[in-house]
Image 1 (tube, rainbow, N blue to C red):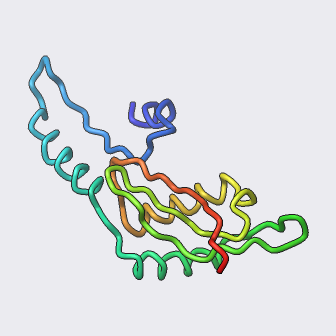
Image 2: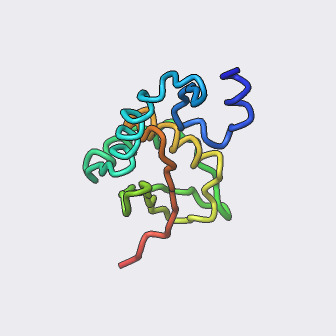
Length: 130
């Protein structure tokens, strides 16, 4: 039953699954600790220094494409919002960063910082030139 649920709900694999029975009144009280845990994960803030140590570690494993003959560079990452957590990655060519690369970064974020039960938003912006 659970594998079928994950297959149908592929877009929310990060959400915890609890089996309960309202009619049989089974495991109903197990919902509340999970809700509390998800709320705390949703409000989590990752310090920028820690986030960038993580980011430097995964960017080395990420094959970046060429954009109009020039290499794409990902400079740094910062958390701009919580509830739900949102992150911005600064790059020289934001349009060249592929969805598959953003999914890899999201999976890595979840492995390192959990964010159980909450969506994570990742945006890519151009770094300002000085």
